[in-house]
Length: 367
Image 1 (cartoon, helix red, strand yellow):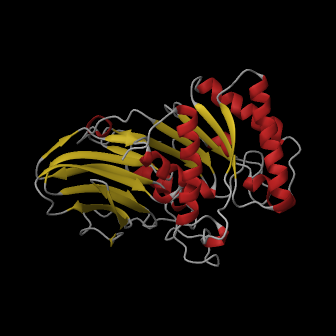
Image 2 (cartoon, one colour):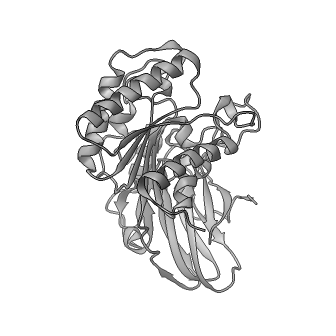
Image 3 (tube, one colour):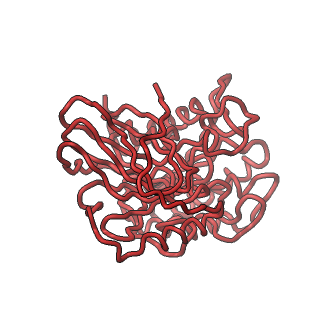
């Protein structure tokens, strides 16, 4: 059962009037929390920060990619966390495997994310539901009535590089007529996140709605996903090291081929991107995926181009690259806002991906 919470009373609210453009929100965070801020907790050492985080100081980590996860282990009965936000984002609070929703307020606030739990060991995961368009967030520490311990590292990791489908656009929409919003977006319910939980793996998601490999939605060729996918914050130059990945899923092409577009160099540049990924990670299994938003001639053209790119890698001797088609199940209600996959649609995609991982890597799903 999902619940919705707004946390406790704010503390040290900045009172800043956040503006909607992402770069302004990021600039505000930089001004409010410079790198010389006094350290209270070394967040990277005390907690697990899974995904792309930019540490402004030992006690402040900024994040914007969907699915960015703060994992906290504590022995006690309550847990408070301090977060700074634009007031437009929300997170999943997963307590010992049970998720709930927390809508973040504007400014710096302290939220009691666990209250009156049985005294003992608990694992809390704070997972960003929303994508970078709604502004960055900052994690600024935690407090408990007990003690902290660092959660164990997971043995497996997935890296998903995609667009709105991978970000969870419209996954909680009840009909296809609803439009893009933070309220119906939820990375926790995407195929990548579901698959990761099935195999007890981390998932790192680099996804922004409207992004493509050669051209973005509407034809803009600036800041495509291959240009920004390694950034700590999508809106700011500055790459982070390539994340440890056992499985890499490239789910791009929908925006490139939408509405009859046919980028002439798509297959060539897709093959070059796969080559670049292989240079970063010599051992990962790479899946080149498409579907389910395209149809007809657009889908056929995208599928042909992606398969051609995969064939280039296979001919180069790379036997750990494969094509995946995410197709809708027949006769099922699998679409949410603007025809994006809803929860059932994302679960179907996860079943396709996890089945391939089982076959190719011989991973076993956890009970």
